[in-house]
Image (cartoon, rainbow, N blue to C red; front, side, top):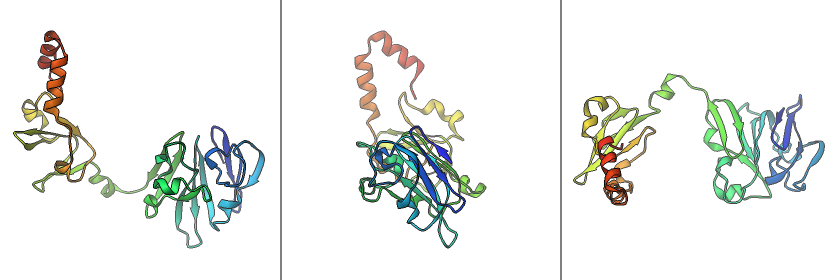
Length: 226
């Protein structure tokens, strides 16, 4: 059983879903039930009609997450609920699917081939933990540089005379003096990072120093900004 802020979901011994509480944003998957309180547990028939066995549920403020097992034994993660105002990222699907009030639940296909260890529906976010060995994590923070080389960890990058320069985490201590007052630093890899439209740090730096007084500008130059 999972207890959310205003709703609850329970799974019986046959893998069927029961719910009670508020159905705002159709977080219980009931498209034809008023949003206000369901006073006693009732079968969540729309979800049960999927013909799968529920294994675990998590209730959040605006949505729910449910892990099903189909007849072939494959686990499928579903998000339940619809778009709240302009917010739908917590549902893990495209906007058009998040707006479907006739079927307010769908598979989060990002995890269709993953080993889901645990998950949680929070207020406006979802957390999913997937299983895997060291191989899955080896390249978690691995950057591919334009010359084809790989760098792991925190990567500093900046433009000098129109050319991108990189300082890897491994070389940082030896090369940190090369870094300008303003530069980018990323840890999660970004594909084709040099082809993206990055902010003009030189223009930003100039604006900062122009707005700052002489004493403030001197202090910033002395301390340096990365």
